[in-house]
Length: 298
Ligand code: IPE
Ligand code: IPE
Ligand code: MG
Ligand code: MG
Ligand code: MG
Image (tube, rainbow, N blue to C red; front, side, top):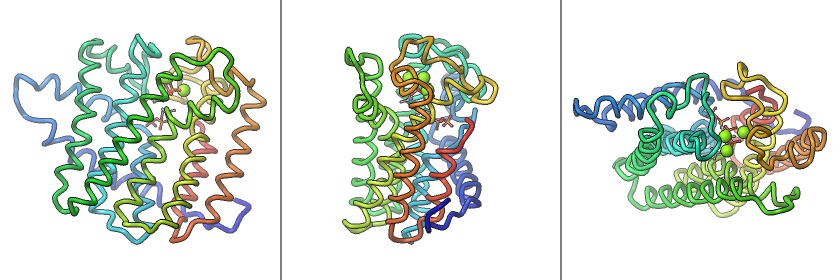
């Protein structure tokens, strides 16, 4: 990195392991033990157990930790965000949407369990997410309410972005692409930061600077995803490469071309670095996560 923000790459693995353990624990009991529902419990766990980069819960925990908040108390929120993200993937892959057969290196949930069950898995993960936060009794009720509001707002934004993706305007341009990506992907990335800010009881100025950083990071995340869809392989991605062209989607690559999309990644990374440099607290873990997001291969 060329700016002065120090970066702590070890934090990604450390916070990732904490998030992973919490996810295992919270989806154990809460998913239930009714023998008649055991196959559905297995279906609910399936897209989660397949793994994933867990970047959203790690972002949340890194925000809380960097602002001196309580990482342990943030775990239900971190898990909830990963559940919402996973629900969005299960539904994104459905035949009616992107019709994808591979996710996180495994057959998609509807391929494994049927389309009917996959719709219910998405619904179930959605509900469980909000329940995890609502029932986190060690966190004061007003904080839980603020976190729930952030997650609800972000989920609503993701859904609206998915709508724009499915029903784009006639002539999408870069401004429209940024808006669509900011919603479908940016909202859940931003939620990692905004839920963290709520948990750490951040002041207004801190909230503004962290939110500006997260908004650019969220758009950048999807531009990179669009570039990887065009340049990487199914093996590396663990999901089908070339899906955007196959689905005639309007992406940074299909609308602007690969060179311009790659230039947009670079511009977004530079802007994110500038916004990082302005963050109070200790954003070293966030700097490492941002660097990973812009420079990943899957
Ligand atoms: C994939 O998100 C969906 C997009 C918003 C582009 P990730 O790339 O974070 O997927 P996982 O969680 O690692 O599987
Ligand atoms: C979807 O974007 C983002 C979501 C809200 C799930 P993509 O359709 O590009 O995500 P991938 O490439 O299937 O992961
Ligand atoms: Mg999609
Ligand atoms: Mg997709
Ligand atoms: Mg994609």
